[in-house]
Amino acid sequence: MSERGDLLMVRDVVAGYGAAPVLHAIDLTVPAGTIAAVVGANGAGKTTLLRTISGVLRPQAGRIQLAGEDLRGVPVERLVQRGMAHVPEGRGVIGELTVDENLRLGGLWRRDRADAARALEEVYQLFEPLARRRRHLGHQLSGGERQMLALGRALVGRPRLLLLDEPSLGLAPRVVARIMALLRQLRDDTGLTVLLVEQNVRSALSVADQGVVMSLGRVVTTAPAADLRDDVDLRHAYLGF
Amino acid sequence: MDRFVFLTLDGLSRGAVYAAFALALVLIWRAARVVNFAQGAMAVAAAYVAYSVASATGSYWLGFVVALVAGLALGALVDRAVMRYVDHASPLNPVIVALGLVLLIQAVLGMVYGSEFRPAEVPFSRGAFTVGGFAVLSPYDLFVFGAVAVVVCALAWIFARTAIGLRMRAAAFAPEVSRLLGVNVGGMLTLGWALASGVGALAAMLVIPTELGLHPHAMDLVFVSSFTAAVVGGLDSPPGALVGGLVVGLVLSYVSGYAGSDLTPLAVLVLLLAVLLVRPGGLFAPVAARRV
Image 1: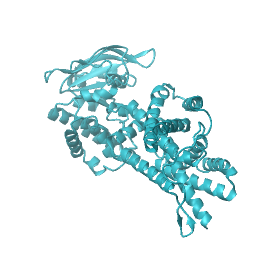
Image 2 (image 1 turned 135 degrees about the horizontal axis):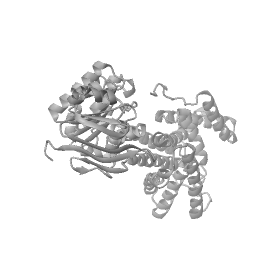
Image 3 (image 1 turned 60 degrees about the vertical axis):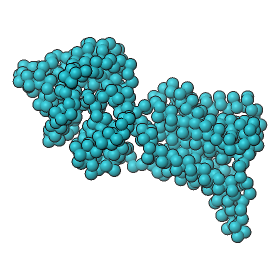
Image 4 (image 1 turned 90 degrees about the vertical axis):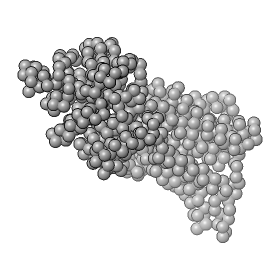
């Protein structure tokens, strides 16, 4: 794979829970080293899309490729080894485990133990509040700290592709801005590729390279994020501002 | 006074076994949210394997080790071949299946070994030392304490300090998130069943020689006492299971010593009822502050 190739490719994916599909023939391409933001109203299928990409939900039809490799039949627990990290909605911090245990869990699958330990230290440097609360249990953290923890835990695995589901959910605007800035910094410094699902359209599009608008289980528009920000008609029609 | 000391020490020795068996119940409850009613029968099956090996080779210790290995294997087998296919939507389903397993295992043991009591060997004397005129612990009691202590410490170490223990805890608390982080949740569940069943087999090896002997139903009453112990401690708490086990052991010892041994099954039920009425979450119930 060339550094500038497409890291994630989704073709004609149909998926859902039970008989009626939630996603209808989704096409999506995320080039390596870019941030893509999937935006849309409630019930557009954004979370379902992420769950399908990470394999929690099996697609009924279509192909999903990561760096040119088909992901069909790859168990969820193997995807981290291929470089995909999924931070689920509601953040998925395990409340019964300490901050340190949550973070270590993100790197347990790695064979290179020395680098896993280095990655852990880097995350502590990136998120200082976590370093101060290493021994605290997950459920003792504030909302912002939990988001940092979930994000940091994904980064300990040094992913190529980060799937982020609603990182802004329930967080103060300043915290959201910090997280978005961090995503951009990670993209620039480490070449991280991010697929971001957001209700908070404004901040998502401010950080993204590419915007994908979903409505009722279909991709309505894919365009450079800057264009979407400026397209008044599209914003009125699908994004509500 | 010397009767009290004797009953206390005897109760603690029995309690140590109940504690180990209760710990096995708690391990499965924490990992799979199943109360494993088949644990007594599974442990007896492992003890029968040990009996066969010991009588074929003449070595108690070889049989002892084989019992632990058989316990581990049987736990993994029950998870992989049976429990994996049970619909856990209703908590009653695995309970009914476990009860079915009890009938199956006890029937098979009865067919293979017959349903008479078989004498079970002890590796150390059960004659008590006397210190200053008091009859205190026997060498076998010390062996029981030692074995339970080793297992408890080993389990605590595995869960608190090792990577596999961290995975097991994570898989139990948040299966889906754990899978996204690369944890083989199904494997951790099987491992949990294996460990619990291994601990159960150890408890059976320790307690059966102190009772009437080996029999397909040998662990039935021990199971009831240990279940009570687990409930006393709160099904979710390993330290609770240990304390609960010792408490139940002491209560049963005092009741049988001062009131008559006929009353012990009744005493277990009264204790179970009292705990469920007064503190249904158990003595060691965590503060229910979570739930988003």
